Length: 194
Image 1 (cartoon, rainbow, N blue to C red):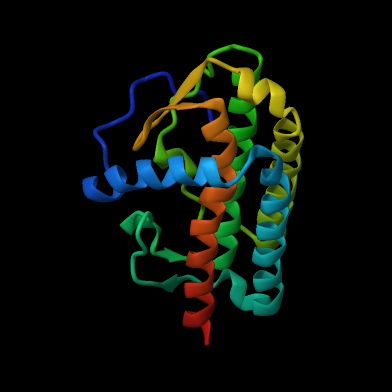
Image 2 (image 1 turned 120 degrees about the vertical axis):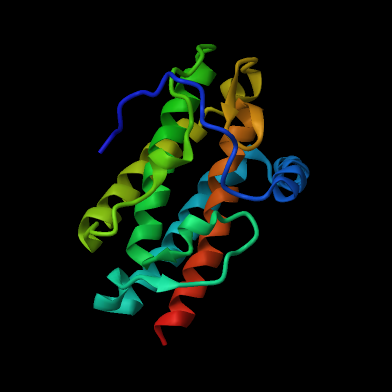
């Protein structure tokens, strides 16, 4: 399900409000300092288990879209997802995050220009496809996260469309940071399913 590499510059900043982007930059830096790289794989796995448990408990309703209130850090366009769509979004992000880390650890620039539009899940994604994709993406990301010395030693950065150039260490921490936001989204979806 990989998308073609995008080499054009990202469109004008969109997504979350400018004030949230500004504040998020500080929150991300604080998160990176408070959560050593060595914790990232276990955090990812725990978050994945939590999301998969919600999907399992929801049964067939896991594919039902629920309109939720926009959470801080979440685009308005992402407020009408199903649990399965959340899993697919995380899989799309984490597969490219793993590829980016592989490049950054090797001292190479990553050719993909990150654009949020590339990470929007299909509303028709099936439960099995999303879960398999998330499992595969997180397995690869966990492998890339294992080499903490190369992550810390990398001097190459890669741009995020909202937060600018990020170091390999910040990108490595971004996986669990990002998944935590979407777990909040998933909990709001579960509440809406009741």
